Image 1 (tube, rainbow, N blue to C red):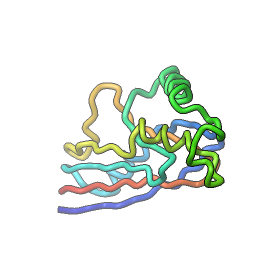
Image 2 (cartoon, rainbow, N blue to C red):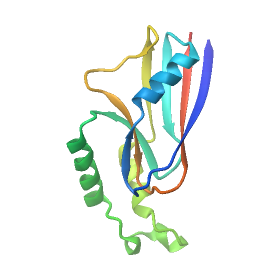
Image 3 (cartoon, one colour):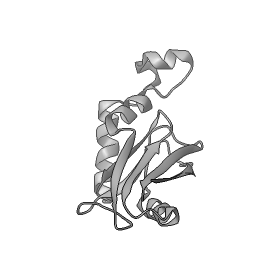
Length: 138
């Protein structure tokens, strides 16, 4: 079995953003040479997420609005922010949206269902963060 590891640095100008990673992950999969296996995509920061869904702008606006209702950005509202941080909400948003995804690799391609794409969700942006892509298989 082979393994291939790659990291992507991201920096969004907005505090909250959604970035489609699908094309980049497909490129990394091609570079890996792996034809059958599994592909893990992981946000390596506790205020960011990786998830799978549709690439539809209205849905992304709905996510942002829904997450803001669940965990409003109000630095006075979170015990975590007593440490001097102002991102307690971002930690909660990440928990809801998830840390990582795993996609099957079949015949050298990501084995998606209809409309599925891989996204990076940023909830405390404006600084460099990393995403890990780890592919294992043959």
